[in-house]
Image (cartoon, rainbow, N blue to C red):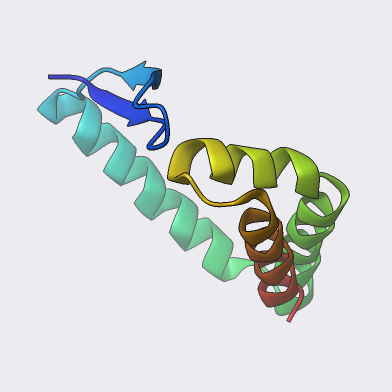
Length: 93
């Protein structure tokens, strides 16, 4: 059974994602672990710069992400916008 993203307001299926095989899942977990190991070796300043860039991207594209939150979660747009802004603040912190 595939996973679906459903608009909770209209009940419309937005996207469908196939199940992973056990092998695919294991590969993704291995990749995530390797990425974590590499990330943890980066100096704090480098990690902070990357996360700060993510905060900047959220701020400059806040409308895009707020609309996505509204579509996927059924939130009011103003609530989604506040969540994007809060997420950017948390990343910047």
